[in-house]
Length: 236
Image (cartoon, rainbow, N blue to C red):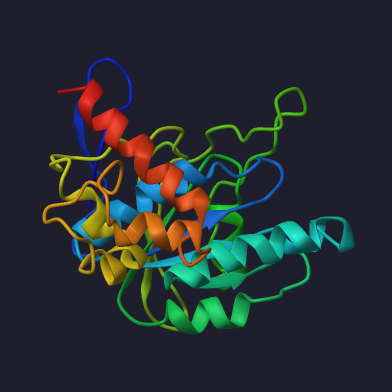
């Protein structure tokens, strides 16, 4: 699994190899989720044939006030075809399900700083001691506590890779026409477009744009796709 740096160097960084799945931890709050960032990781997983699993962490913090936000998130990503597990290291919700999932093979834990990756790993196996940081009160963002990629064996089987928090995730060597193929919901309907290839931006008879208008494809995911097209053009 490789990402491209989002700074001016645009260097490629190998994140990990021989992975069975990528566990992508996100939170609605502290830090606030950035959907385009999540979508770039998901596209990269699709490119390299790695099964992605989204973990919506800190579910105990949201309550009734954010119930609609949780449901909207599930609508977007479960609707796209992804597995989403709701977890809380405080209450234990979802931890058994995640532990069972990670009990075979190698699982990479990835996500932004502060979403609770290391806390999740410790919840899976209390015998482990990954570094756990605190949220910056000034910026409501996580601080980098894991500086290296570290692999841990789980007592119940399987291995987990704890990764440093990411704040940027660029796509590697994707042609503009390829990007939509790594959005599962676009791939499902894109074969019905009038023109081939179709960029799903301006062409008449575009099945993807029609699916967005009909609510079959979420506008949030479609906007992430448009952002990737713009980024692809910018850095060529």
